[in-house]
Every structure is written in C-alpha cells, then in structure tokens.
Amino acid sequence: MLEHILITILSILVVILSLSIFIRWRQTRGTILLNGKAINELICAIVENARAGRIPDIAERVSVILGNYLKCSKIAFLKLSKSTLEPNFTTGLEPDDLNRVSAVLTPEFQKMLKSISQVTDLEVLEPFLSSKTNQILKKNGFDYFFSVFLRNNLFGIYLIKTSLPRSNASLKFLTTALAFSLSAAYHIRQQEKRLKKYENRLKFSGDPGNTNKTDATIGRRDLNRYLKIKNSQELILELTKTLRKECEFNKMGIYVKSEDSNGPLIAVNWQIRDNIDKLLRENFEFILKRLNPGETYDKKSFFDIFQDAEVKFDSILDNELEYFTSIPWFDKRQAFMVWNGSASADKITGRLQDFWRGALPLVEYTSRFEKANEMSYTDGLTGVYNRRYFQQRLTEELHRARRYGRTLTLLILDVDDLKLVNDTYGHPAGDQLLKTLARVLSESVRSIDLISRYGGDEFCLIMPETGRNRARLLMNRIKSKIESSPLLLEGVADVRHYSVSIGGAVFPTDADSFNNLFLAADKALLAAKSDGRNCSRLYEPEIEFKTSNNQ
Image (cartoon, rainbow, N blue to C red):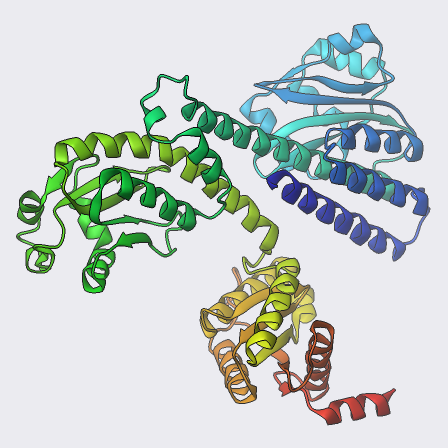
C-alpha cells in the first residue's frame, strides 16, 4: 500500500516536471533537439515502471533516452555505497576502466555536490577525485556530470559524454528529469526497506518459537490483526482493549503526546469519569515532569508527589484510580497510564513493561505509514491538503450531505496579485504569500472545514453544513483577516498587502453534483474577479446569463 502511494507521488511529480519544463521551452527560441516522441518516451518510461513497481528500471530506461536523444555515447552512474561512490550502471566504458573508477565522499565533496542543481562541467569534480580516476574519465572523454540528490540525501552522480553544449535546453531538461526520478526512486526504496525491517521485527516478536518475553504479549493472530490498522489512535485503542482484558482493569486510561508538537493529545480511557479525564488531559505535561519513566506509583505516593501543586489531585482522584505509571514511548516521548483493578501493582508492572515493549514497534510502524500517507495528500509548499485529497473529500462530503439532507458550501479563492509579487520581489516572495494565505485560511475556518491548494494561486474550501448566510460571513472574515495579515518579506522594509477574490456555491440549491458545484463556484469566482480585486460572490442564476452574453 505504502509503495503504491509513494510510486504514485513519483509519477505525478515527474510528469508535472516534464510538462512544465517542456512548455517553458516551447516559449524560448533556438534549436531544441528534444521532440514530442522523446517527451512521450520519458513520461511513459517513468509512469509505466512506477505502476508496475519496477522503480530500478527507471534509471536504465531513461539512460537509453539519454543516448537516443542527447547523443550520449558514454554514461556512468556512480552510486553512493557507505562513503564511496562506486560504478553501478555504465554504457560505453571498458571493463578495466570501470573497475578503477571510484571516489571517496568527503564532507567537502558532498557539500559541493549538494550545491549543484543541474548538469555541470566535469572539471568541477577534478579536485575531489584521485589522479587515476581523473585520467580514466579524461581518456574516455566524459564531458559533464550531475548529482542525484533528494533533500539532504545523496544517492550518486551521473557522468556523461555528449557532443551537445552544456547550455543545450534538451540536455538540461532530461538530466534534471533523470536526477529527480532516480533520487525519488532510491528514496522510496529506502523507505520500503525501513518498513520491511519493522514488519520483520514485529512478526519475529509474535513468532511462537521466539524466546523473547513479548511472545506472551502479542500472539501471531493479534499481530496480523494489528498490522491491518493504519491509524495510530485506532491502534492504541485496540491495544488498550487487549491490555484491559488481560490485566482485568476496572478503569484505565492512557495519555500520549502527539508526534507533532502542536498536535492534539492522544488519549484513550475506559470507565473514567469525564471530569477526571479532563483533569489528566489538561495537566499532561505537568504530570509527566514529576513521574520517573517506567516507575509505578500507588495512589498515596502519587498524591505525595503533587502535594505542593496548585492542582489538588487527591481531592479529585481519590477512590477513582489506584495506580499511575510513566511509559517510555518511541521518538523519545513519554506517555502515562492510570488504572484501577484487583491485581497488585507488582504483578501489573512487569506485565505492562512486556506489553508495551512488544506493542510500541506496532505503533511506530503505523505512525510511519500515516506520515507517508499524509505526504500523498499534502501540498508540499503550504502544508494544506492538495488537489487529490480535495477531490476525494468533496465527493465524500457531497454523498454525506445528500444522504442526510444537509447543505454544503464550496469556496474557490484566487490570489489577485501573485504575478505582481513574483515580478517585483521574485518567486520566493510569491511562495511566502501562498504560505501566509494558507495560514490565514487555517486560522479563519472551523475544525470541520477542509482547506486545500487546488493549483497555482487557487485554494478551495469545503464547508459541511453551511448555507449561504454562513458562507457570506466566512468570506467576509477571510478578507478581513487577510487585510490584517500583510505579507512580510525578508529584506523588504515595507509590508506588502495582498487580496483574494472568492467565488462560492451551495449544495443542493446551486448544484447537485461534484462537477456542477465546482463549475458554479468557479463561475462565481470569475464574476468576483470581473468586479475588481478583493471581491467575493456566491453563485446566482444571473451569472450564467452574464456569462452567456459575454460569449
């Protein structure tokens, strides 16, 4: 499942990269060797291999394209293995020469490679290579190289020999696409290996033949059931159900801080009164600071620790909970458990340690899956949901609204002057504007509303159970919030004010399907743009009339 999600991301990103660069080239002058067939071969190579899961084939397939369209008579890929760059894929190189080409990756060498974002003259590598390697590369006539980097991870470098000049647009395009696809492919393989390692570790801990103490904690049948759960909150709930039954707890609760420092507390409780549950949630950090990790406290010793605290736990928790313990969690976090039961603390403490020792790898595995899944639904620049997730959720919310006879509003927002900001201050300033807008939107909507970046400078808001009056209030609130949150740019003394145009449509009064609702909101947005900047419009029938007249 995770592999397919990551592969899909790779396919989409490379196709977008290919098309965007190709379109830009169409706008430039000069001889372009790269034709439509080459573009199609590149896209098909990546997409077909990605769908089939044959990610390593991408390197060979695109290398063939390099030879066919960029006149590369010699190609060598040096893959990073530990701290050495070693030959991994070559074309046109003599076997004797191949075995003697390698390089040690020093911190200075890696820093230099990281700083290079496109195909570069081979002479830049010379200071970092041995004299023997330099001689072999010169003898074989290599001209250029480019790095295969993703974030801070270096996977290798490509060496090529071609008669094309380094400034050739086709050369820049294909080498950039190749570097991107390869780095993403290697990154995915790393993630797959890590997840496989976790799966093996988990299955080993559940093997009846394993002498580890966790055998009695999580059996193979339970392990297979837990591995199917891909939500941390749900998994913790299922684990605590098992623990509660085995330890015969009358009452119990577990409280864990979210991986995101600003995220909500993960809490599961059984038969604990609401006022006590609220008290434990609100004082989570305070309680953890005073508990020693792994140590269990009875009611009296727990109350003694907090006798000087402003919160009088003894007056609230007395006769409700008997024992308290801190649990070392993964990622250097801590959790704490509370319970009440018939068994003594001595018997329960050892059982808890064994249980969580076997259960925490499960929780960590699920958490990693959630992060990978979230990446496929999140816009990398702004942090809000992306177009793919928007389309999925709008379909779901429309189905829910139709089923229960409720309203739903869709808003489409478009930045009025993003091009002016880009032209005046540069594209990084435009990116900062989009991130600022995403933050403003997040602060302006309800928790049940969904924000997504639809593409470019457009954002979409899905607002369940929202009619026209509430939609108008929200549009006014967004515009007011934007006016009070100007764009602050580094190195620019004055603040930059910006605005958005907003179009909206309401289900089911304005439209009764996904496509019709989006079209109605888009027409309302066009009407708002025609009214001038910083305007908002809800769909009205006369918008159709005006549009048809204009046509």
